[in-house]
Length: 170
Image (cartoon, rainbow, N blue to C red; front, side):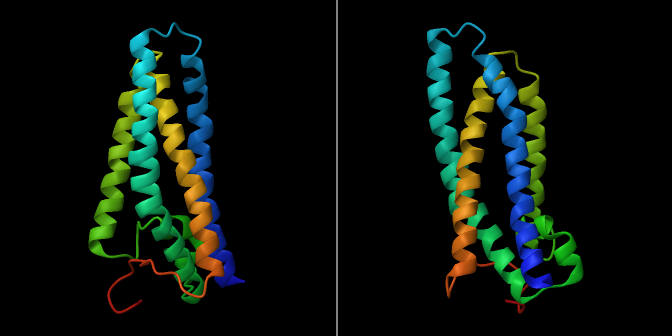
């Protein structure tokens, strides 16, 4: 139970975190449409949605974050440790028990996201909603890709993505 429970908690915890962000961002994104949209708002909306789908959804989530989270969850099934299982979502996101580079990257990306959230909240509507809509698209892509990679990680005989654990522990 510790093996599969920890891995499941890791993936579900990350999915809940991403889903919570989509839920919270949906209100200001929808509110943007209650404001006048001029041609430049429409152009910005289209560009931001496409950019975020590619940069956040495809490049960041599908090519990096999602397979790594799934690989770390799979690693957790074979190597359950109490502290890793208790904090499985943080473990799966690479905040601890990982390579130094991955840990620094995870912390810096998180700090950058927090800073961007603070800055975007300062924007007036409809600009805030336009950006939030793009972020929702990227996060939704991330949720779907994480779900698919997690299924692959737990059903395939081999999952050729590194869990990025400390050297000698793979």
